[in-house]
Length: 76
View 1 (cartoon, rainbow, N blue to C red):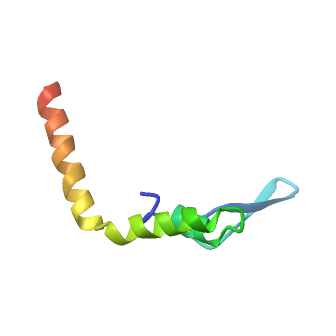
View 2 (cartoon, helix red, strand yellow):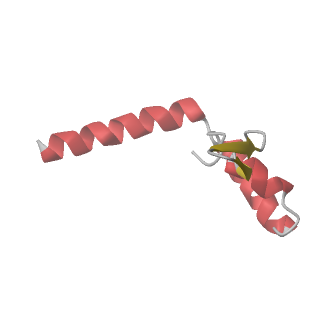
């Protein structure tokens, strides 16, 4: 999910009276945030990029469903 599911990060909360206004960043995946971070070494970014290139979200979903079905059969 870290490679494919975008998340909006809360940047700030502004309170005016009884109301709170929240300001969010643009939705990005955790993977995109790591690549944009200056605190992560280049070698780690390259390894993550290689992993990302091998991923297929459809295939991952099929494998996940298969494994969940196996768990359901074991439990019930």
